[in-house]
Length: 398
Image (tube, rainbow, N blue to C red; front, side):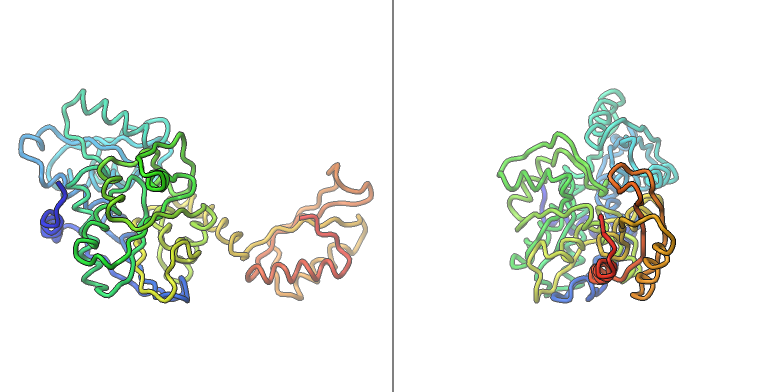
């Protein structure tokens, strides 16, 4: 059973293991609110998951520890379990979906875990872990639906209340619900007036749907760049806690997540993975009412693969109007490209890529399509360039 005493006990057990992560003021995230960032992306193992995993393993009996532990994970829980098991001298086996970021898989190996890659998503890895647990007799360390794991995550709520005692709200990423269950339970138990908002990716809204329909629901599929919260089936215990203690759950799109990751890099010099940035995306795009309020956004993790980060930055630049693609229909004659380049340059745009297409069936037989990629300041700047090109007689196709 989850109790406040258990959360406080977890805080005591974890004080020599985890970092008390900083709370950073971030006024640029949303100028209409006082936004603070709880930087669990800078936690040991790069995410909050080590809190719940370590506390759970610390509470095992000597007999249970001798059997070893097994877990399933989208990546971050794997690292937490691996580190906790190794520190306690316990063997660990982790099942991960085969699409988990390479950086997370390799990190779990470095922390001492044996790895089993499972075809599919998190829920497929979970099913395989359950099978292996029955075969081996090892102790299963659930990533979210366990009172000890939830108590460990709840220590973040205790820290937030100490770091920002007059906060009006906290925004928390939601996958299976372990993090928000612990944070909401701790905060609501000590300060019922503080709002607790959850955020899911629009492509994986399992807890969102469950809360909306007041019954636990499982998704057929999930698709999002926020791999850490791509969970088809929320927990039984976490659903009950969310129903009781969470004020609202909202969703954000992959484009909004990408924009939030880019903003954190540029404005705060912080790296967050997709799952870690959803709270900031919700604040940036006013998915919850933060105007005039003092709000803590929980950055739950920073373990983003470098190749994915590159794609996310590109997506974020496009979403923010910092990069733009133009297709212009031209007459295939000398001087056209020079005039287009002159207009863009005079308005401060920077062309980074250009391609002539003379073989598109949708164009005039004496014409061509000019595809341009350019760096711009924002969407207003993009529209200024488009208007100038149109005013000069150029036909903007897209």
